[in-house]
Length: 250
Image (cartoon, one colour):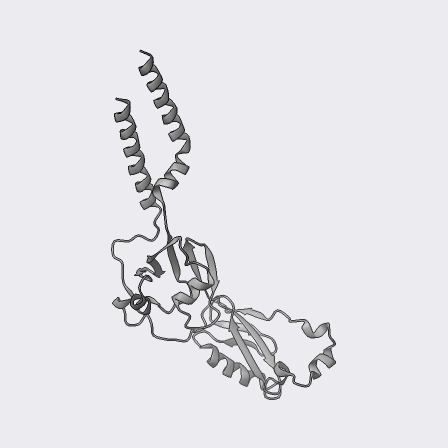
């Protein structure tokens, strides 16, 4: 009888642990897509400036002479201490697509690529500086990696691929399920398999700002359940021992 009770309790324990494991898998949907379902996923594109983007602007004269500074004239002019000072030149794109910049005031940049915006700003600052050199960068384009790791990864450049971002986030090791990488883009969820070389080529998608990547951790249901239900297991073991002692004493 005791043996039957123990087997029954272990069965319930295993079923419960497996059920809990399945509930922990994120981004589960009825219809999952593969990157091969869309031909546009791997087309290289240039980001365009959108509202609420944060831009970093640097303006240099004489075609950017001070960036290179081969004769260290800038260091001599500013001094050793001041030459390392870098002012924070960050500007937000307003809801109407405009940006307020020093000297030139309001200028509309929404919908333009960085290169297009740089050319526009080069002409605008050309009224004040001799052959200006413009450097414009995004500082808020990012993707989110969740699951085995939780990290926000900044897209350092345009057309970064999935493998690059996973490497930056240290998201791939022996404790993840590489056959079930999920990428959420808007309302669509793509299932990616990185276990085979030919599949990697197909699923190494170009990422877009705002993408969410779920890396499913390798779960060990029995071990995790033992940890989660430790007090209950201890109680059941104690009760079972008591029942055995009482049964043997009769």
